Length: 200
Image (cartoon, rainbow, N blue to C red; front, side, top):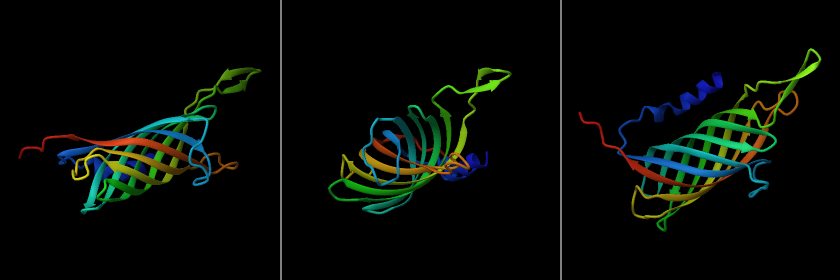
C-alpha cells in the first residue's frame, strides 16, 4: 500500500491539472524482456506490452521542454509473469528544426505482477490450486527516446517515437534475487485531443 501511495503522490500534479486546452495522449506497444540494461536492444522471443498515458509540461522553450508523464501499462511475459503498472516520469526533450526530437526520462512506478503458470500447494496429502494474489513491486526506470514531429512548426503536432526503457523491479525474490532488471523497446505515437476551457 505504501508503494501505491508513493506513486499517487508522483501523479498528483497531473491529476490536479484541469485547464489544458490540448491534452497530450501517448500510446505505445512494447517488447519486454529480462535483461541487463544497455547490453541488448532487440530481444526474442517477443513478450508484448501496451502503455498509454498523458503529459504535463513544466517549462517549454523554442526547442526544449521539461515535462512529467502519467502512465498505465500492461505486459505479458510467457512462463514468468504478467503485470500491470502505474508510473510517472520526469523528462527533458530537445527538438530540432527538422522535426527530430530526443528525450531522456527518469521514472518511478508501482507494479503488480501475477504468475502466468498455475501454482499448487500440498495440503492434507493432496495438491490444491493456489490462489494468486500477485506481488507488489516498485520500479525505477531510465528511458531514452528518439522521435519525429510530423508537423514541424506546430506545437500540437503528432509525434512518432521509439523508446528504449531500462527498469528494475524491487523487491523481486527477497533472499534469492532481490532485484530483477528489464528492458522495454517501445514503438508509439503521441497525439492531442482538445478540451474546452471551463467558463468562469
